[in-house]
Length: 528
Image 1 (cartoon, rainbow, N blue to C red):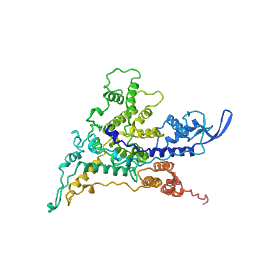
Image 2 (image 1 turned 60 degrees about the vertical axis):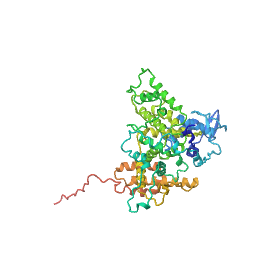
Image 3 (image 1 turned 90 degrees about the horizontal axis):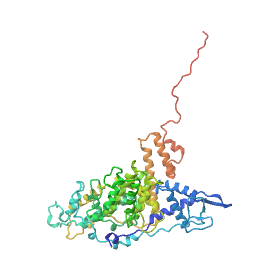
């Protein structure tokens, strides 16, 4: 068993189950019910499969958790899951199979719609004993590539930690005992700083249900930040863990089509489709998704951030999360995202599928080899589609090294150099950056806090739109109208009446003044 397998901890698909419950509730509450005739009989309060696909497809595309990349076929697959799980049934009351197609067959809602029970979220804490010691990791801190950019000066400190000594400025040097900063101390600093930054970015009361400190391998993080090519792609020292040469050649051929000269074979009609199928077969045959089963819950939680006004926050969160991946996974993921991004934007690439557009094909083909749960989750494909779409569109920014993490770690190490200990053997952990889990709260309290925090952030966004003087009056009205559609309750709280809304534009007269002001002519009497 590999070290990766031995430390694998698979958290329950908590977030995916919550999304399932939300979608089923929306569908049950919003799907229009009508009278239909079938086989010379009338059936009330039902809908056709085609009507359900139309309504659910539009709802999913407009939902920030899924987005416009959701296809009609994926919607059909979800409706089949609904039928299998008795969210819907046919007009004869049958369910349990996935016998549903995009046609005029009739379905209805059962008297009660089942809501899935949220899985337990304490597996991470219970399985910490399975996490191996850091000394058994594949990568060791002292062995770094010498092709490190100057900005990574942190390595100089890491490689010389055994010789680091505090500088004593006071006169009583005999009473002060020096304490070396060990490799374990520095790795603990990395863990805590990453946890603190992630908790802040995700806006969660605790990361206990999403990520455990034992899942953060500092050596992976440091390796991913320092062993990179001039293009920012991770370079592996162990070439046996890299992509096979034939896969790299095929990916390069597609990414630079038709300019790549790496493929010496003569081309033929349909050649590019065969090359694409070769790359797809390799990635789909991997035993584990590139984001790993272990971090499934972490990446699914980022779905809440994939909204236009939170785009920068989502990029920052994904920057840190992708650093946690084993270096071979990060390299494969980055090269894959670069390839599909180039292909989807290429005007020279012929169609790779007769019925599916190039961008949709890229996302549909590779989504499940990027993200999926070890346990089958009904919304897996839609969740993965949304995340892969965002990764593809922002791959250059997401795979940049967040230097502020290095600065935070370096600053703390520098501060430790000047710490003075009064007694030999005094524990340095007392001055390490502290991260502690919050007091456990009920799911209801967590949801209330999350909603409250989210509403506060959205309300602040509204105030920023109102105060922003860079917007023209037309643009401001347009943005406020869009905000009102997306967040009607928050908008109504801010502008409870039309009068309060009108005050915002009071400086702009509603009745235009006449362009010319003509005085009444004075008529003089003709009598003298």
